[in-house]
Amino acid sequence: MSESPFNRLTAADIAHLKSVVEPEGKVTPREAIHEDYSHDEMGAVHHFPDVLVEAVSTEQVAAVLRYANDRRLPVTPRGQGTGLVGAAVALYGGIMLSTARMNRILELDEDNLTLTVEPGVLLMDIAKFVEEHDLFYPPDPGEKSASIGGNISTNAGGMRAVKYGVTRDYVRGLEVVLASGDIIEVGGKIVKNSSGYGVKDLIVGSEGTLGFVTKAILKLLPLPKKAISLLVPFADLATAIETVPVIIRSKYIPTAIEYMEKPVILCAEQYLGKKFPDHSSDAYLLLTFDGNSREEVEAIYEKVAEVCLQAGAKDVLISDTDERQVSIWSARGAFLEAIKASTSEMEECDVVVPRNHVADFVKYTKQVERDVGVRLSGFGHAGDGNLHVYVLRDDFAPETYARKLNEAFDLLYAKARALGGQVSGEHGIGFAKKAFLAESLGEVSISLLRSIKRAFDPNGILNPGKVC
Image 1: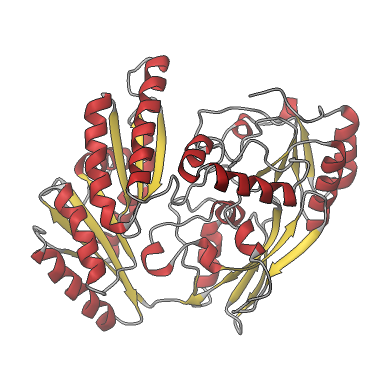
Image 2 (image 1 turned 60 degrees about the vertical axis):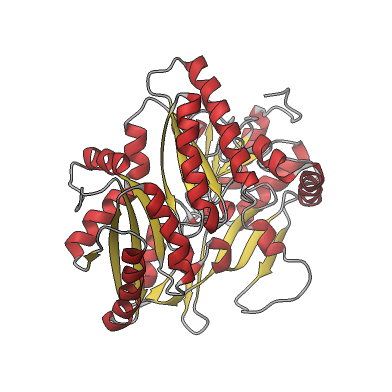
């Protein structure tokens, strides 16, 4: 990192923060901060904050930010630390402001179909709570232990994005504390809004660089009564991927369309100690359908099964029992951790391309693997063009791996741009992808992003070193 443009934290600063936050919240000095807070799941970048502040209210967050802004102290927002791009790492030290204690579900409004929550509520707790009321929060990122604040900060997507969309589509309103300590409310329970600039949608996906989310109003849907999956084996990955746009053109849209290869499946089997239901092929599509009755779901999946068979599928395996559903989806859910366990270190390329170019990009990854001489492993949301490609270190020396990693990333991101894609589908930019975002957007667009950042945060204290 370059020399810090911020003031250094002092004992007097820590004393003031304690007076603002404790005893309801908690302030932890550098020497007592757990190592987990020095990194996120990316793991490659480690920086400790000088102090960890766990606030419990909007007013406490506002007081902390107001003080930090006056003192020119950097503030890094922190949820559960499940990100993969270094967005929750305190690159300049300073204050890490955690949402861990702001974890209350505040209101379920069944008339307006909304749920109001604090940012520290976990995604899995939201899903469980609303389903108990026969309701449904559709965004479904793979990491269910992530906080909703983190999901909002990265505009998280997940497997159900094909049919239902991403986090931004389900954020109706936000309470946000600005760097100045001022509190604003954007959006609300209203369904339509044409009242000025879309500030709410700027905040969603801004990775804590524009403001600190302290409350969110989420849109809910009625809970689908039935869900059935199809596991569709293909002779090779190219045929599987090329079938995806054919499915989309059929107008019978699944809830999710995932692709996977046998090596990743075997890796997940070893990691979980459980067998996958089928080993007949080198490549698979995993499709899910939901609806209000078995008859409704069957009518859709039968049409799609026919499309797959006509496109070259070897078979269509129906997963209509709880046991088979668990077997398939537990393997899919373990892919990331299984790949991580199979190597000494890895970094992720989380690109998104138009759906009709998914096959082109996946084929290109095989070429990169050969040309660079490094192992790549991947899977992805083929139905929305969001692909996860992991560059694995294995036995390479650190300097050799760094060179191969950079070479692979340069090629992969350049190919995504050439196909009309972008550098992140759902994991954000953080620290790791800043250079690739700049290359992708160009000087004029990056300058515009920086101007927006200055308008919200003139002193640059909010999550410095991230996004742009």
